[in-house]
Length: 406
Image (cartoon, rainbow, N blue to C red; front, side, top):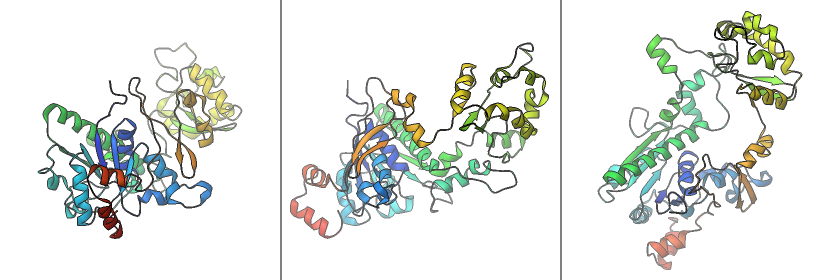
């Protein structure tokens, strides 16, 4: 049995930023040999930080080191002919080629799936871009915020009479990265069964739009457009974040939280939590439609309890009553969380700026566990790959360096 699940898989990755590197990080941490190909100036994530001591240093970008664990790194300008020659030599031994460029750019470089499939018939070409390789928006630029705007997620977030809101962070990039990773694994499984390469085309806008819950179904079946509702889930209220004595908690009573016709004589779990059985006689509390419409009155009913109890007290009691409440931790809280600590979620990797704590693996594998090794320094594997594996001489490397190709 291999030490890790993807031992033996060879991946060449020219993508930058978040989506592509996150997909190849998952492959690399699972054992794939991922060669990260950076432009001579480095992946642009190196310029984004965060940096130790808030002092910009491309070698110490926290984002770069988080997204590129377990890879080896070379520098190569694939936008020029001599760089494309080197890259194609590298692709000759690869199973997967990952790119983060638009279709027209890859075509101009001679690196599109159609350009490569004759010479590399078994190669999986995996491409992630803002709007995909086809369609009227294919040439548009974009990022996570663009994708969130183009999906209904942003349209449904915020207050009904205010502008739509975006969530924090870069969720569109990570959603697209996960879809790219899944697409790569699916094509590799097909290749193992039937042979031949494939083209995985991930549009960030598509990936995020697939997470729109049931908005399209509502419109398709009912002709209804789901509106913004104070960033709340309009159905099944409460499904919300509320203030408590020392912070905030997620209040989710779930399907069994309130009294139902099947249990008319039983005090509901929510009433037990709030230490007031009489709430079960209040229509604002018991009626799903009333809670949704009169949500401010509902909050007035629950706030006396929430405001006098800590998040820990509320969540522990709620969970004992089988109510799926949760804390709303800060990052410091998350890093010290005993549950994540017991699951060994966070990992420590070495960087030029010191040890960096990063989120660990998104899933556990008992027999072939994922493991993160430090991200590569810029061009650290140039000699190993170009000279040792592709046969370039030291003079060749010097010429390529002088010309700015590596």
